[in-house]
Image (tube, rainbow, N blue to C red; front, side):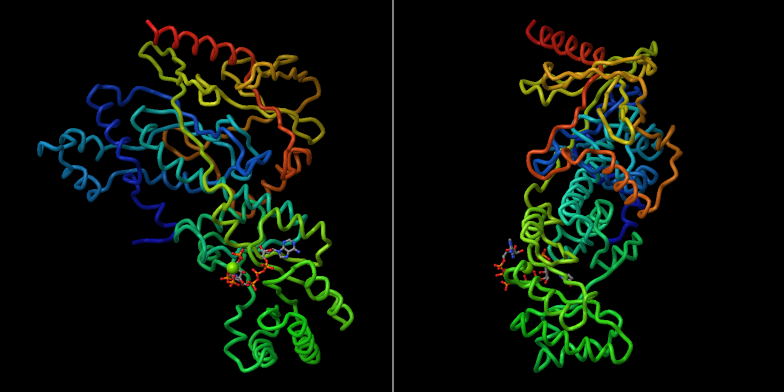
Length: 493
Ligand SMILES: Nc1ncnc2c1ncn2[C@@H]1O[C@H](COP(=O)(O)OP(=O)(O)OP(=O)(O)O)[C@@H](O)[C@H]1O
Ligand SMILES: O=P(O)(O)OC[C@H]1O[C@H](OP(=O)(O)OP(=O)(O)O)[C@H](O)[C@@H]1O
Ligand SMILES: O=C(O)c1cccnc1
Ligand SMILES: [Mg+2]
């Protein structure tokens, strides 16, 4: 079993729901497999009751699509599948079809690190129906998790107000692949480093850490343990001070810090992992300052999340660096994003695109039909609104009206005079060939930072954020409403 990022670079065509394969077979049987279609991947609600979301996962998707093929073992497995009556599930002609299948879709997507909102297409896939369909499950699997964790990391780092946040989650993450993806997404979202060494090696994320209580406990005294650590790592000493008695632990750290200084080395700091973190961090700060260690940092950990960090900031806790594990990598308070992937249009033989809609009792569940794009309007470096529009719309008009897809009374008129506009969907694949230059992980992280600066703090606050306007351009809104009404009539006939 390969457990590295290479996993995404081998054949993973079977990493899909069985129904994608049964639909693929039925598309093939009914002669529809090559019909062109467009699917959009989007989510309906920002996670964590927040006001924004950070897109992540595209790099994995690029690998997935580039390596999209059924290898011999995959095909043998499918050929062996039987129906209840003993007949083959998939006939030989279909297995041969899959053997020759080459990824040939166009994919447009928002770049990783982009701030996104409900209803915006994060990924748009255009191509043969059968291929678009087979991509549904893996695309959702990848984007849902990494986007969720990048968003959680962003919230946690926003709460830390510029202090470094170290991701310590590996031991509590959802399995091996979940841990690796979480470390990657946490870095994209704003964390400074990870304790996960394999993530460091695979993705180029900085690796860092301190030491555990077991190190202290393995010696007769805490002081002996600190001295021994200082011998081994004179340049990397962050002493964990709370194994027995926190105040005494700080005293011991200072004592060893002085010995280090005599050798021309500086203790980096201390870590506190239990008790009242506001109280003990303030005591630590005072003791360190008084002893002549004003540059020594106070690291805190212990079941932290954005709410506790916010509270500790309000209490004026003297914490410089935050170690966050469990609640970050498991997205503890909301374990899934809920992004979906929906058919938006199919192309007919005469070249005409037909928009498609799924009617639902819940208006939030009605998708946005047709071939559309999304543009972000901004002014003087501040984002004002996002507009989802049909791709043949004239983008040089003086003004537009955007309408909330779930509430037609929420509208906004956009006078485009002196506004900057950016198309959020960037071309990634054209006819199956990658045309996108992938940024490295540090550039993606920078993109997150740049994107967040575009948004007013009212949209970024953790509780009851101000809703950022995202709407359908009027003519798209009308087309969608008409189509829903038409499909409802059709149903009741
Ligand atoms: N001043 C504080 N304000 C708000 N939350 C805090 C504060 N200090 C610590 N916490 C949080 O309270 C929770 C529990 O802390 P508690 O004092 O119970 O430590 P603990 O878990 O008992 O320590 P130990 O590891 O020794 O069991 C943790 O999530 C911690 O981050
Ligand atoms: O608290 P998290 O955000 O998950 O961060 C990681 C935690 O992992 C370690 O202890 P561990 O939880 O293994 O043991 P402990 O709680 O008994 O200290 C570390 O000391 C942190 O407290
Ligand atoms: O390096 C650390 O301090 C660390 C690493 C993993 C989990 N908790 C703490
Ligand atoms: Mg713990």
